Image 1 (tube, rainbow, N blue to C red):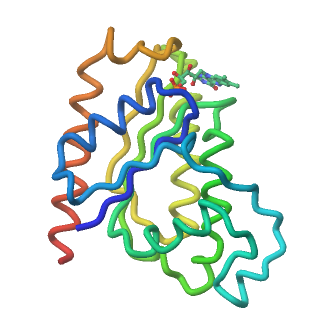
Image 2 (image 1 turned 180 degrees about the vertical axis):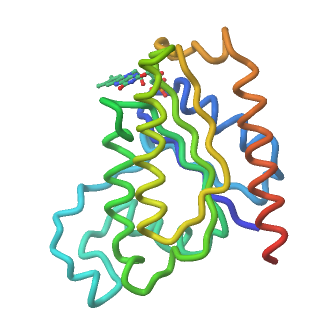
Length: 186
Ligand SMILES: Cc1cc2nc3c(=O)[nH]c(=O)nc-3n(C[C@H](O)[C@H](O)[C@H](O)COP(=O)(O)O)c2cc1C
């Protein structure tokens, strides 16, 4: 089994904690954890030559990662809420997956989504909307979303680790559910 776990926040904070907890629930050999801060890649310039060739004209960390994305059975996508949307860094990551779009190489894969934000109460809807924006990408790409975990009231980088270990348990359970649903397909 191959699961690619993507931390869509530059800082090593709450998104990282959620994705890391999920990874710890699975066998190390099944998981590749990618923190986008460690990758050096350009924004998609929309040339669309990849629609014809299936290849990106750029030669950077993202073009080199495409093969791993292609081979993955499942994904963990983690994002902080930013203006009720996914993070810019995760959006650029998604844009750079366009070479896999026309040949429908993402279709039939499965994902879980983690979203975290500082709001609580009614305002926390912004975090759900952010998670929905990740789901919109998944729907476009033909990736089935099997679970979503929302973490509220997290402003500081260590908010989850210090105040909300229950959410990290939810992330672990969510990863196990993803794994089980992938096993059914094998
Ligand atoms: C530009 C910006 C926009 C934000 N927008 C929202 C938002 O719409 N809703 C929310 O709940 N939190 C929002 N936040 C707060 C972050 O989501 C929150 O601090 C989160 O814990 C950051 O995750 P990280 O620790 O993984 O970076 C925003 C933060 C920034 C920097």
